[in-house]
Amino acid sequence: MERIKLGDVLDVKRGKSLSGNFYSCEGKYVRLTLGNFDYPNGGFKENTSKKDLFFTGYFEPKYLLNKDDLITPLTEQVPGLLGETARIPESNMYIQSGDIGLVVPNEKKLDRKFAYYFLSSNIIKKQLGYSSQQTKIRHTSPDSIKQCISFLPSMDNQRHIVDIMR
Image (cartoon, rainbow, N blue to C red):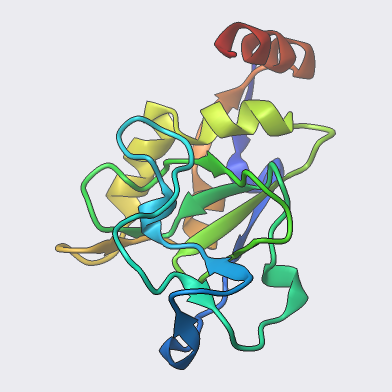
């Protein structure tokens, strides 16, 4: 195992703040919210808490996510949400909003499927909790996530762990 800083093995990109003027009850593109994280069970869920989840305005194409993209919340509306992860279930449907971080692993050092479990591990979640800003609704940033420190298994062991976790 190698001691690493997350920023050495991945990047985190913040989403775009989307104008509420373009929220709609129907449309082609769904704006991701914190309600898409199935906390505390883990993973992705469709958000059924809001009706105006579609976005009909212009957005930069780089914020349109692809199937299996890995996301993490940058805002914690319920204790324990920071550090959760989810995979996007379908391409060209979900828009990354400002509360959502897109996790981009360096696939020479960090297996994409392993990153899903690695980021939501207790050691990472605790560091994010300690470094988060505010008290009532806590926030983190891509830079704070990249500053977290942990031990990373070899690529072969990462793949073996993923095979066991499925």
